[in-house]
Image 1: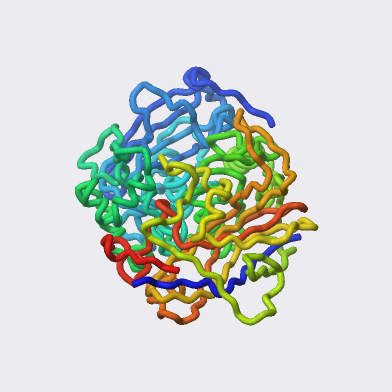
Image 2: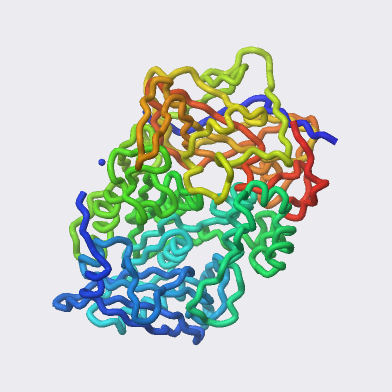
Length: 601
């Protein structure tokens, strides 16, 4: 049986609006200016968490403490030092006390690890969560680490960003500044392993093949992940089948969290309990949420964390910075380019020196008031920083663009009778998410040239005329698709693309020649599984042949489309092997068998 999926019409809406100095710190410098100690800090339930403390030799004044709690190892352990301490080199130049801790159940800490351990309001007795583990750790540090000034800052990127958010909820009066960076926030709605219910197969399988291995007892050694048997991920995942089949075949059903994924296919109590946003009420700390506009893992989480803190804590110091970065790019690069796209300056160095360090200095070290806006967001089209007193800015208006006949795109609704465009979506020949032979999941796919799929018959590309006057897109983008199908489920991927002019000059980045003419720069993309169109908790089958509205929110953007450029919106029904294949039937995709994948027009 062949399912038929038709895109009847589309309405796209957004809220729119029509900025160095580097302190060099070598490994040898750190060893000459810091001492290292290790301690097991006892928690309220009696278990201990392994903690590594780097203290400055300078003791003429008292120093703030910077804490990072991590599931990725507080090591190296023993005499060896970390090559980099703190969020950036500015902190060691200022003699901060730097502390890393293995979270409960990881590496040298005792206990059992629980993924995105739920927060417990009104804890009693020996009840614990990540917030209470932070409280107990901070309490020990300020009472036992010599020469500290009684003020603690917490930061972390990705999973440690989740622990930073938990630190903000700890309620310890010494925790005065917290920076969740690309924080894991909700693993079903928009971070890492699901987006709007669609399962991110590649990331979940590869990451959890190592990270998710049980750890019977404390160990300094990392778990080894699964290595693909040959360098063609597209083919490997295509023949591997569903996540349940791959878990059984390649990992011997050994990863507990992959079992949880299969047991909880919908947004049920398991996932809802892990949504930290519902608890984001804080008392003491100032907040600085940081993220990357091209973060493949937790772009949504950064925006969602900032918004939740803002909504639940009116009047507090709560700032957000979103730059043109990959996952952690603000800490791991100079930020002068990403993929094929150059930016105006070393954007990451600017953030580290002018925003991040002054934020902590103000709140922990009697520094001057940080000169930062409520929201500092990089314009990825105009290639410059923009600052706002709130996000999105109040100086906005809603703009709507519509799909037109012949795959055109315009800001006016179609005046002719209702029309549709159709395409064949074959789960056995899914649309790849990145160009070439996929040997690994690149981080650059978030910004990459989309010409490799724009001529596929199963990808619709609606393109505007050449832009005459520049316009900016700022904030959340909402897509409305009116579809009809003879099947009972289907995925939709919506992409916003900046098409460069024919006359765009070629350029080089680190010796690579970039063909800029007609370059299709991906600005933002998102996916939704149609069964979740009305509720993530209560999926509904599509009714064959019945026109249906699918609404999709894309994470916030800040992009100016310049004169001579064109805007393109792409629509497709697979994004493989980034996202698992939808069987295009209302059945469990986590356990689907080969015969259950059906074609769809």
